[in-house]
Image (cartoon, rainbow, N blue to C red; front, side, top):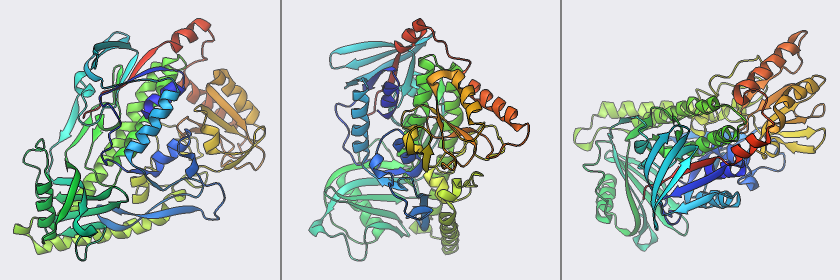
Length: 540
């Protein structure tokens, strides 16, 4: 739904094929990490979370865990929301759907995709709905239909998978008498038989997850039962525990899958349809949100004839490595949580695991002090790749393929900060990116030259001149619609360097947006009429 809203607001005629009749209310993901949240507020979502006053602090933080290890602090720059938003996925889906409908997106619920076939410059999509089969001819199709969706297989997109080695159960339950059991509160609990993770959801119940690192489920397709959850909780806890009514149950494991490419001709994959991983660290929802924010503006530019088809290749080049990094870090977290089963406990091995956890806890504490604003603060950027805070929150991501211009900003996310504009008064980075356009921020004597150069690409690039001392970390910055800097000038260009910097700016704009856009009314009408099938089925 988020991708559909992004496309609809950019003038792309969009159809959503959704298998479910209504938004699924099951308690799935509930956490958005910093980079996903930062991207959403730049598109006008959840703006009430953006700080409106200077707190006097460089950053804000909150505690988090890595592989069950406490001591990690997730931080963000002081002018950003977060560092974590806890909100049910169902609420976010409703928010995105309202925005998509307001943008004119056509949403067809109870429609299951049955066929996806690329035919030259279109993709034929056949879906089965309440009134029978319906057929669409789309310019592009995006499969965002989850880990058990059908678009990936129907389109023939190959993938690599890793078999499960651990098993878990999850359930939303009520405990008899309103209490859990003596000595165990909400949080993460490890015994020699496994892990119990317990969280209270006010007004809903208690979310309980179990983890058995000794092996996978016998048959993951068999629906779990309340008695199975009861037995597993008691086994891991090593005592009798009476659970009350169970409202919802599911199985999970560390099975993983990664599509070999997130672009397959005119078919794209996003979210769990593209990548499946062990659900620890609450990174899956954030990863999918960032997929949508990365792909939306690119598809819109190409469909509307404002950029060449090659721009779409950058989606796979940027998002697949990000997904691989998450898959690697959740695998590392599972190794921290893993220990030998009770029947063959090796005391030395267990001690080694505890020592390893201690090492990561220390690294996490150090990372917390360095992350957030430190990862991006100053014109020179920062080294966030080794600290756990930047890794989990996604704030250490640097785009591949960006040319280094000496500023240190190319490929990095531009943090929010107050800005003093020459024509619009006081603003900030979040407010200026709300329009969804490319943004050229410039100041100083050379700003006019950069602005005239960017003007060749018409209204595809919005130029904002800043007053002297207006908050710019560099002389000029070119920012993509998703908040990443792809070109920057030095704060004080040296002799002869202006021409070189201008040439780099023209090269970057040409690479992303192609040559000067056509002003042909016929081309604009044809582009606006292009059809795009966005979300093709969600597994129920």
